[in-house]
Image 1 (cartoon, rainbow over the protein chains, first blue to last red):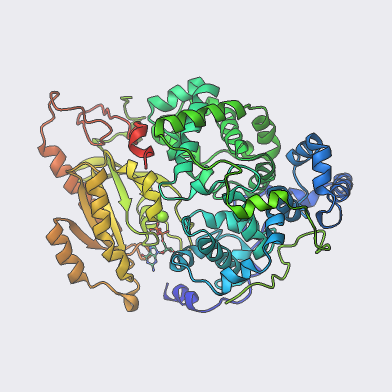
Image 2 (cartoon, rainbow over the protein chains, first blue to last red):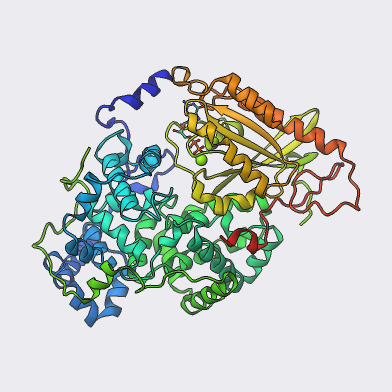
Length: 387
Length: 221
Ligand SMILES: Nc1nc2c(ncn2[C@@H]2O[C@H](COP(=O)(O)OP(=O)(O)O)[C@@H](O)[C@H]2O)c(=O)[nH]1
Ligand SMILES: [Mg+2]
């Protein structure tokens, strides 16, 4: 045990070759054997995938130059395509395009570096304490003081300086970590800004502000939606005194990046970045629907357990997502938000009420840098790793 | 709401609800996993929101089922977690013996409990990570005398080495049991609400542990 402790102080050597990883480079759990499927894909499937990537590349254009126009012309096509999943090798780039973060990056050259190098944050120790507790089972983040942990630290520190009201809150690391698997530090930082400050959709900083106001609102909305969409289950939950804060807080706080299987989390994020937070509600409701007949029989303790350990087949994106898309929530979400605000006598910032920096972007024409790489790689040597 | 045990394995005399609180990183989640599953993780994910686990054990000759709510330690999370103090019979207030600030913050946690928990909640102070001897920053005597002054029971543990973990839970559960079993249960008493340990008897009926349903409590900030 003392030996293990010593590892804290010294960088461990290269990742042990004996650790087998899945296709997303998470260290495999023994039970998790289904992941190998992708290797045995047929040539046919492979070809279909290639065609899909070519199609996406054409839509995006060089470095994203054609993207905006295409979205404007054919929003429904884009929506459908995204719901089918963004090809993994284009994911990082497309996420930056649909979240508006690429625009932020271009408008703010040097800002990230400034935040990382020259500013100090009151949250530095809090961030450090959590670094090794964020995706501890992923190869990229596992190595103490390795590139993964360093970029995670930098992004979170930069954000905590950039928005001192939010600072650093546990849970943000999982968002940043997910992003860092698909883009550079600076890109991940601006995507975080885009989300929390509301570049495209309503700002989500309320997830992390004092009092966690947006978490509270989402939990309220979710509880009502459960009652409306699955009345029997809603009834059962209230009889068993289960409320969504017991199982869904982390869904909202980390946008499913905390404990959901990675392939599912990615597919949800594809849609989330394009369509907004409503997909989080849809997926949550779909999960409850999918497991409805089991859940309805369970008493309190078993319910809590079941709501944190959904069966593998429920977590299959190709099963769950179509079900989620069939759940309609937009209108009710809005009404419930108003109801919530009336009860609590406050309003959270809406999309468009964001700071001047973001306002300006909407008026500025997009100019795109020359192509970096068609596939934004996670091992893209990120030049801004500091410390 | 009331229900009986689910078969022989589930039978118990009392059901106690206990919360784990204290600064982030002091080892709450590992104390819980050590106690309920005999597991320890050197790198465990930080807790987001609340986690929950149970264990049934013998205390003072009685079978006690304990429901434990483990909470996120960061201050910002109290907006969510403080709702879980309500109805808890016990609180394990954990600090890290290698980090003085986590001990200094114990006062703030006590205030949290005063503000949100039932007034007669049994509080136990736990200094965790005693295995890190060379890094110790909080002396046992200091914590001991602080606990005495505040009327808390006190123990030091190591979740890593499984030292005193069982004992800590035994101690707080016995204490709760002694209080509960002394108190006569009369129907004229105000409803125990979400409180755990209530009823004694051959068939066990307990109200489900819960967080308050009153939105107002947790949602105005
Ligand atoms: N050496 C040592 N480390 C511990 C002990 N308990 C927890 N830890 C470590 O401290 C870190 C935080 O533990 P965790 O249980 O997640 O803390 P929590 O935030 O209070 O829930 C983890 O890296 C644990 O491995 C202990 O008794 N001894
Ligand atoms: Mg924890």
